[in-house]
Amino acid sequence: MMIQGARFIRSRRSIWQRACYTLCLVSWVMGCASRGPTVPQPFPRVETPPPPVADFSASLPASSVPGGRVVDTALSYQGIRYRAGGASPSGFDCSGFVQYVYGQIGLPLPRNVAGLYRSGQPIDESRPLEAGDLVFFSTVAPGASHVGIATGDGNFVHAPSSGGQVRVEHLGASYWWDRYVGARRLTAGP
Image 1: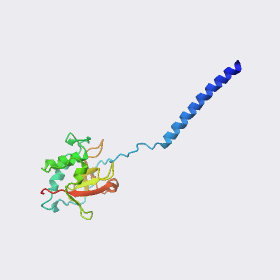
Image 2: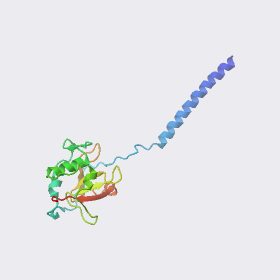
Image 3: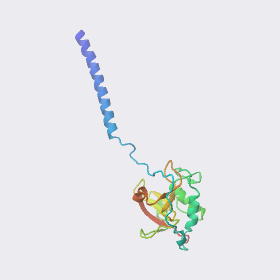
Image 4: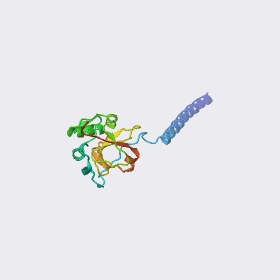
């Protein structure tokens, strides 16, 4: 009788040990396979914008949107927090910010990045960007998925992702340069 009881206790202990061993092994494997979030934070934090390089706003053709007014308007919203779907000073997403800023100078624009990417004229990469040009980036999906407004000095102003706020960043920063997909120039007339 005693032998059977010892086998039973050893059998239960053996099952418990195997369960603990398996749980530890699975936890270890999952921990080694895990690399944190699968989607990187799309927008780096920059506390202060880099110094201006040059000002091209004086060279805007008469048929273009008044780039200086657009940039001045956009810069006046620096510090406004990001809000998904936001299109007002209570919070902006990237396309809502661009639509709102251009609306303030009387130019209605599409509400989403895809619509904005089809607006205006494409700018050849060999030409310098001017104040008010729209700049596009591939951040969360292939193709244009983020938009900002060129300031004409090698920088752009935009409403970055969650936790961000409207701010100026340098187009040549590696994060943005690697994701740049093109720019469009809007015109005030037909």
